[in-house]
Length: 480
Ligand code: IFM
Figure 1: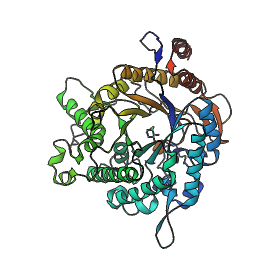
Figure 2: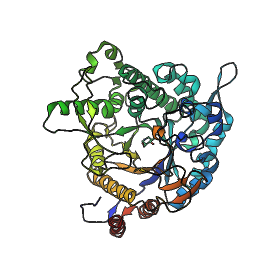
Figure 3: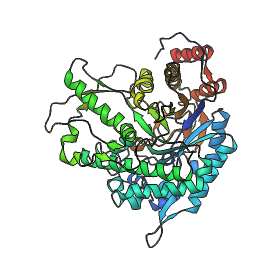
Figure 4: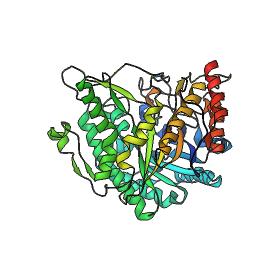
């Protein structure tokens, strides 16, 4: 994967945040959650055949017991921002008699994690919903029930009261459209419904409602807290650039997958692009949502890859067509094309309607996730496997160059959070996909820095990408 451009010094703005992102279920291994099946995901992973490589997140990275050491590693890399998510299922448990109560032990654990970060001067990004529901809510329909939006705001209010002093940036929902797609269309995530667009769009409406209520709950307690959500941005292109039907499905995918959530927040209304809104049951979901309008103070951009789409001639007609298997660029081990230009496109073009707030001032933009996966057996432990991750190094540098180009083009990008600090549990794919700057050997939970970690540390320390570093990375790449 050779870069075309001549190396140059690229300085990032003063105060730029260099960090890493994680989520609770993927790293924690929270034993009470797993044993008592407190979450929908802790039930799902133990069902046979749900997880592709047969692993579970039962122990994951044991972050719950190792967070002090992991934060120490983060700090040793000179990273100054960290994104975690909160374990809603562990924090809001159903007590006997079915009243829902805040769990003190779980809350104290998060106070300790966040305090450890703050003591080191690390900026905290905290996600409230990262794909996992309390089981008692999943049993009542999860996001298909409007009550979940209400429960989400109740949970958020408790967090604002108990942890608000330690949270710098709030994220209500992680990747809402990826979540509804995997849960109700592909069926790869709990509750495993397939091609149920009505369920997906119903959940979408309730998630927007939940976001608005959570935003309001935070702002009524902490008026100056910056609150947003993350959007998974995936540029869609037609497989055949001269086929209008391929253009049409790529356009619809873009409107629904990329745009619908931020657009609804901008306008305060959920509306579907034609012809979706012509269907009665979809049309019924449209309309205003209370307190939704402008409920985003900054932009959280998750970016990994692009996708080619094509029209599919089949009955019943699926107006979203299908994903093309055609590949034009090298891929990561999960088959995702490596396409740094896509990050530039997202930052300068796709998010343009949201770059300025209602007061006309530019919103801060953070890349809240971006990363590269390779795949190694979860049973591997000793040895130097995966430490020379020159492909991740190249991915990192090429995406940071694209990000820097976007800053030069005038976009107010204020930070970059790499996915992920440590290897972790990649949902339906299990433990074998490795996204970490730091390797985790699951059998003994040892941590080892990869080459990418030391390159990223140098970038963070100098607040710039510089020719020596690029040339060194290029040499490693050519040898690899
Ligand atoms: O691991 C996930 C994360 O939970 C959400 N964003 C994409 C990552 C990589 O697939």
